[in-house]
Length: 203
Image (cartoon, rainbow, N blue to C red; front, side, top):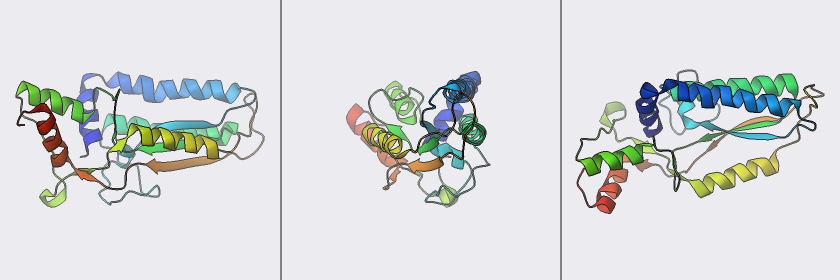
């Protein structure tokens, strides 16, 4: 179970509808507006590395299976990929989905693991670090927000135009899915060590 999945499971158990409202209903609302626009825009949207779910093969490839989500959050992102594919096929929207890998930086989501790790460390609470297969250390591709922004802009710069207009498809449109992450995974234990150093508190 990766850090994003841990965070997703923890938060989803408290507020499952938030994921549905944002990642499914919110996405459909956006696509409905875009499909009826004239001209239609090219779309770049945030999927997630969590779609790889129970897949244990690393590194992940865009060709790997994504039908075994390990959290509700992952399931909603997988649903988003299927939904965007449908709008691409039916309405000619040019769509690029980016599977983000453990994004961190200023203004991060409060349910991310490093936030609740830090809070629990400061409160003196025990923190749980999951292990990989055969008791191996879990490693994550921590990706800084500025790099993710550059990836999003590059995806927009290379996107082809949508082929529809006013809700009617006029030709085959571009549909892309890319992994967007760091290429040097970091052990979760190192993250905890960094937090301990900065917080001057032993986990």
